[in-house]
Each structure stands twice: as structure tokens, then as C-alpha cells.
Length: 510
Image (cartoon, rainbow, N blue to C red):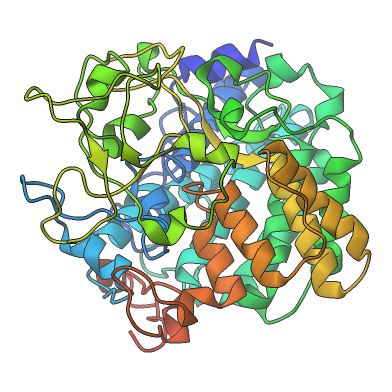
């Protein structure tokens, strides 16, 4: 089966996409126009519908999507100021960045109502159709794969919104809409679904890596489970550090993964299916109309059009400040992925200048409402080198999880238990060594947190990390000058969802 071709071509989903509780199309027929008896006659036909579920989840990782942005906004590493030259000012963004969000925030509603719960609903419909198919016994792995995708959706829902409707049926009864489930209930569901899915999925060692890419393997789900367990105290009020170690060992023990020579190698368009470090990702192919990576469009300064010979001028949006830059040590190779200070062409010598001959010098942000165009440092993990462009869309696949996270999660879990401290230190030093910085002699929780911040800048890990370590509430940084109330560790249920479904309950204090 040409799995990768199917993912790159995005065969149209034959199952109608459902809208879960709180969305507007509650009377939509969820099974679509093709019945399981007439459609799922081969595994390839079924896979074409599963691809549609992947695409919904991919929106949680794409640079322009609110599923990704609301995970980065509110941290100390990601800002989007209004520009004095016009554009980018958005009150919804400002609310999240200042930890002053309200239930009518449009960014939250887009995440919930456009990406997150429609994706969960799509998974419900596809699972129901596969379970009704005469080929059901041959589709066990695909059913498990879709259950894992749905669990991922609920993981995001639990992480962002805490207490959410937990619904797995194929059709919502408009007269009996789903009720809010507690965050702990959702946590237990996510753990159960991931664990049961992993049991049915193939290991990375059992498939042709390049041909099977980018589908979920056992190891991809074990990595997701490790992340869920890592944050179990936040989600369910109970520590699961030993389970984090177990899940990480499942991945490490395959000997199928290793760190790339450089972090940036994971994000190259030319190294997607062959990366030794990438555990899970989302395929894009803008030449075929299959999404596209617009990371550079949203993040880079307009003069990068000259630097990389682009056909478009980047929009000068997302950026970061000295709060994140100062974490990096001199000589850290990860600094090569960050743009700050005087800017040069790719030769590193020729100044990058505007039409008046003035060199671009990127400074920290000084004004969140009317920032100058050179204010704000930039992250360039998704390299434009070797990219096949379709307008402003690149063909770099979006990365969800990397092996370095497995190493750092295990190290943190060991350290928090106070066991195997030498091994924990070595795991962290492996990640540091790869980036050319000196080994540490000892660990602290603060050092682990900051190493994660350096390694995963703009990879949608920072918000979860800051909440788990407590710095989300206690620390101050640019545009957040006071202590944050702990109840703001989860976002409010969007107001429109409460209006559409009276069975939902708003999160405390909102």
C-alpha cells in the first residue's frame, strides 16, 4: 500500500465530518453519503478517510492556526505585537499574551469550533463507519490509529480547556447534547484510548519507515502517553512519573531513534521521512493542494525575501524577546535557528539592507501596540533551504514530537522521583552535547525547565511546561508584569459554545 502517496494526495474523506456539541451544525448527518457497506471494501479506502482526521489534528501544529497559536501565546517565548506600519494588532491575541483572556475570545472559538472538536467528531464518524464495515476484523489497526488521533484531540482539549464534553458517538442528539466532563475524566479517557490504541498499532521496527511515514506507530503513541503522564498532576491531581519513564523506555528500547546532528535537521523539507529523530509529524504538499507550511510567512521580516530569494515578502508577525534569548549560552548551535541583532545574507558577511541601504538590525520588542518593523527576534526552525514553494506555502512537514523530548521527559521524571540521577543527568547532557554546549555536573528542576525551553522554542511545549513547573503563574516577563491566578491555567469555554449547548458549564472564575 502506498501509504505516503495517500497522505500526500489527501484522498477526499468519504465520511461526512461531524460537529460535536457546541458547534453549529448539530443536525448534520454524521455518516455522510456513502455507507460502510458500499465504501470500505479495502484498507486503502478506509485509510483515505483516516487521512481527513490527520488533517484536522495537523491544524494544531500549523503556524497560522489558532490551535497552535493559543498554545504559544501566553508564554514567555512568543508574541505578536501590533505594528506601527499597520497590521497585526488583535485584541484577542493581546488578551492571551497578558493572561487576561475572556470567554468571547475569537482565537479560542476558532480553535474549539473550527479545528479541535470538528476533528474529534470526524474521528468519531470514521471509527463508527469502520466498526460497521464488513471488513471490521481487517481494520483493527486503522481503528486503533483513529482512536489515537481522537485521543490526541482530547489531549489538546483537556490541556487548553480542562473540563470539556466527552462524546464518542457517531451522531449527536440535538435534544440531549453532551454534558461537561471533568478534566480528570477526560484525562482517564485519553490514557485509556492511547494505551489500547498502542496495543494494536505497529512498531516503527515492523514497518518500512519511509513508506509508512507519517502515520502513528506504537512509539508515537507511547511518546504522547509520556507527555500526558508528565502533566498528570496538572490534569488529574496525581503524579505518574514512573509511567513517564515506562513510556519513554518503550521508545528508547527500540533503538530506532537517535538525535540528528543538529536540531534544525529535523525541520528540513528534504529530511522528512528519513529523520532519525522525528517521531510524529504531519505531511503537507502544497503543490497538490494538501495544506502547506506558512511558518516563514507569519514569522519573518519582509527583508528575508531578499535573503532567501522568496517570491513573497514575509508578513513580519510572530517574534520573541530577550526573555527567551538570554537563556542560550554562547556557542549553542540552537542559536543558528534564531534571528536577532544585525542581519546578513546567507553568506553571513553581506549586510541585509533595505532599499535605502540601511542594514536590518532586529531588537527586542519595545512596544506591543505599535512596534517598529525591526522589533522582535525571530525563530526559523522550518528552513527555506531545499523547499518546493507554492506561493507562500513551503513543503516542510509540521513536526509534532521528536526523540529529544523523550530523553528530556525521562530525565525529568527520574529527577522528580529522586532515582537514577546519573542517568537523568546523562539524558539531558545528550541533548546539550548535540547543540555544542558543555555538559552539566548536576540537575535542578529549573535547569531542566530551561533546557526544554531552549530545545523546543515555538514547538508548542512551553505552555504545558510553564504550567507544570509553576513559572506560568509566578514569573513575569515582557507584557506580563504580575502574578497570574492559578485558575487561568485553563482557558474559558468559548461563549458561543455555552450559548449553543446549555449542558456545558463554564470553567471556574470565568
